[in-house]
Amino acid sequence: MKYEYVLTSSLLNRAPIGAKTSDFKNYIINLFEGSHTYEMLKNEDIIILNVCSPLIIAESVIDDVGNYEKLEYNGKTYYYIKEAEKIDIVKVKNRKFSSFKNEYGNSCIMNLECEKIDEKIIDTNKKYQNELKPFNRADGLLVEIAVLYSRINLVSETEKIKMMEKIKEYANIIKKVGSKEHMIVLNKFKEHIDI
Image (cartoon, rainbow, N blue to C red):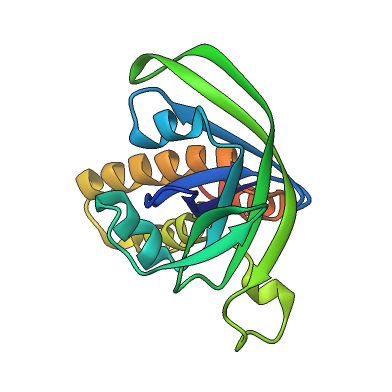
């Protein structure tokens, strides 16, 4: 499953990033050439994955301005986001570069295989570890599909077509980033509408 984090490192940079993991110990991170984060991570071996609210994830797309805290690790200073609930410190085990073609064109992609080496709970008000899970885009998209589905028979045919296009778009994203549980719910919608 793919989770959304804000990535930080030894530089004052925060970058929203999707990281695939099935065990919260091993991660796969893909970065597209051309971004500041891509250039930065060509030489960084330690990365901090900040578990943050969706608001901080969204703000991090805009700029690197934020409240940073310092963390000393193996004699080097790293930064994490002060408002993070939890941080996972990961080490890059393998770095691969390849070409990638999608709907946006051809790109070079850097694939990072990472392993968690430490973690720190920042928000000590959270009582249970499962409250500290990172955000997954499939959660919000399933809610959006539910809202659209609940209104689909209340709108004109033209609006219904637009709603179905959105539902199909969201379903495709859920298939990429969601879990088995997300797919079970999505399949329930498929029993009622053509997605």
